[in-house]
Length: 535
Length: 103
Image (tube, rainbow over all chains, first blue to last red; front, side, top):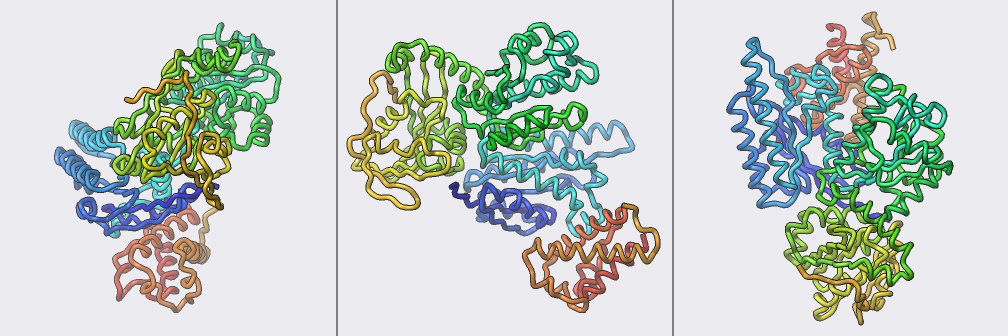
């Protein structure tokens, strides 16, 4: 049971925004959306006025910036818009979504055309700068989206000037999709792992039959299709996605391709792989256990429809995609089209993820060799740095709140604004964990407000070391004045915390369909080998 | 699908496209009472100007799909409260058919 959050969207623009209302339908599985179309053309009034919305979409075509050709004044208009946006951000909560300028300059004079193109780029640069420096600003690439459709098919010039509606319905649909993606990226958890097949996916051919030297993976067609896929996977890795492989091959055959062929992807770019003759669903399940991640964090890519169906049937929460090497135009746009890989931005933790998960694999190795669990845990030299109400952690804390499903007492989601409010009204704790194998970054969050533990969650990668109890113990020590209440709200995914409060010195005081209420009694026991450091 | 070539078949296609678009938008707008309007009824006074623009755009798109080319329907009369073809639904269908036959 996941309670859909309410989300209000306001639209304003120098065009009729009513057709953009379709964006609510695209977000129906993520939120209960209400929307309002604010008066057309009233950009300044809306940005400086009292209109409240969780998301304010400001759609501007080129006429906001210039009349017939982008010029120096266009960038000045963009800076003026940026100032209005900044002023609104300072006084009102919510996200603002802007758009690149969908316009193709033309001129009978080449140098003038170049000047126009530069002026247009300067306008967009102002918008990008705004989004880069303010988490609550997004910029959809309207120009790019409509270019893909074809500007001739996208624009209706007569309607632009007669009715202030320059877009054909197909263009509206494309823009609606971009708006929905931008909003969804802020609402839903991003999938973390791409598991890719090897034969006829990472390379063309079957290594066990064709031999390493005959595999197609080079800079000529069709090998280039696989080379490009590998480059795209590496790009995803650079954007914080973990790469794994599963393949029905002898392990030495699989590894020999990486040893003997010059390819963009190296074996150590993969966080983990399984090369054996087991079902792929079994291998993916094992990878999930090894990485301590839920199966709903996984995306699986294979060229074989049978394998896709096998995984889809047995692991329905894994998102599966067919890689059809015979249709490169589709195969090479596959990764870019996966909406669940999109994100508003990438945190330092995301980028360091490969090393974090590699560290986790090393911990598992140590655990296997240790005489006892206690000896293993003590040998890790675990340090937990607790920061309270640190604005610098706002982005990561919000990200963690919105993507943690399993070890999460209430699964309550917050926007960045709401986390900032909680910091002003109570305590937001961020727990950063380090041990001898590295720094895991911020992996735990607690929100305490009005004497209640409103949120308590821990990333799965930090579990199994009793860190969660020690963090809770610290919070109880800081916040139990005069009492601390807590709540467990069950969801289909958080069964692992069902008895967490019972097991850690909280007494049940009531229960109902929305979960169970507790109050602090003695609190969690001390775990001596975990050192808490108050930052 | 081969685009219709004779005037009568183009007229039929245009009217069918206009009807289908209106029916679809009645659903989209969540205004089922508009579905009960007859050919003599006044649509103009029952929808706002933004809905008129949406109807126009969507009808243009539907006709483009049916005929294989873009035919602009916009005209200064559409939003004119004294001259709009939407003052009588049948007039709207005829207006669309005329625009299509004019090419």
